[in-house]
Amino acid sequence: MSGHSTRTLAFLICALLASVAPAALATATGTPKPPPKPKPPHASTGAAPQPNQTTVALYGTVNPHGVETTCYFQYGTSTAYGSQTPPIAAGSGTANVKVSQPLTGLTQGTTYHYRLLATNANGTSEGADHTFTTKQTPLRFVLTRTSTVQAFGGRLTLTGTLAGGGGAGQQVLAQTSSFPYFGGFADVGAAVATNPEGGFSYELPSFTQTTQVRVRTLSPLPVYSSVLTVRVAASVTLRARATSTPGTVRLSGSVAPAENGATVLFQRVRRGYPPLTVASTTARAAGRHGSRFTATVNIRRSGAYRALVKVTNGRQVSGASRTLQLRGAPPQRLRKGRR
Image (tube, rainbow, N blue to C red):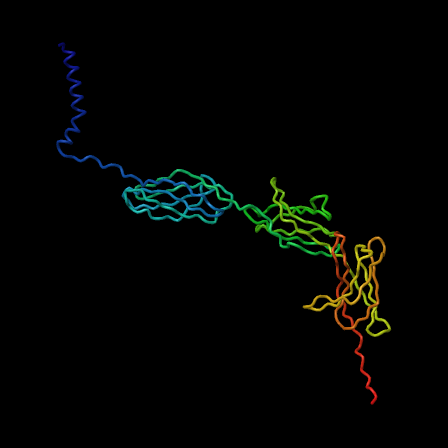
C-alpha cells in the first residue's frame, strides 16, 4: 500500500471515531438523555347539533396531556369569530374529555363559525373551524283586527305585526278588493317599514263599500296576511221635532249612500236588552248621493231612540244613527168615578 493510501485510510478512521465517541462516552458514563418536549393540550371541535332559532349547544373533546387545562369556544359570523364562551375546566388527565357549552341570543337564519380552544402551561391548541346555521321562524302577519264595521266614507288605520325571523325593517304594502271582489286585489297607498319589533301602522283611504283588505311584504317572495273584511255601514242621521201632541214627535233623517226603498226602523235602545222597534218607514230618493226619510211617531216611553236603515245589497251593511233622548207621552190620570 502506498503512503498516500495509508494517510487517507487513517483520516477516515479518525473521523469515524470522532463521530461516535461522544455517544459512546455518554453511554459509558451514564449521562441521561434530554427529556421530551412537553405536549400542549389537544382540542377537537365537535359537529354542532341542529340549532333552533336563537340557541345551540357546542361540543368537543380535549386531552390535557397530564396538565391542568381549561377550554372555551370561539364563535362569530366569520372566521374572525369575535365572541367566546366562558372558560371551563377540562382537568389534568391523559385521556380525551368531552366538553360542551350552550350559546344563546343568536340571530335567526344566520351562519356562525366556531372552534374549540384548549390551553394550559404547555401551550394552546385550536380545533378545526366548523359552522352551523340557526333556523328562522317563517314570517307571518298578525293583524290587530280580524273583522270590522266602518262608517260610510270613513278612514281606517290598520295595525299589526310581521312576526318571525327578519320581521324588522320590512317594507309592507296594503291591498284592497271591493265588493263583489271580481277584480282581485290591487295595491293601495305607499309602502311603510316595520319597526324593530316588526310592528306597522297603515292608513287606508276612505271606504264607500264593503272591501277586503290584506297586507303583503315587498320581498321577492312576498308574505301575505289573512284577509280582513271591512263591512261598510250606511251612514244615518236622525233628527226629532216636537209636535203639538204630547209624546208625538216627527222623526226625520238622511242615508248615505242612496238606499232608496230601504226599510227604516225606529227603535228604543236599552242596555242589556235587544232594540225594540216602535215604528218604521221607507227611505226615499234625495238626489244622486243619498236618501231621506220622515215619520211621525208616538213615543210611549221616554228613553234613547235610534233609526236603523236595513241594507241588503252587499255593497254596504245596515247602519244606525246615533241615539236621541225622547220624552214619552205623560201618563194619563184616572178620573174618579161617581158614586
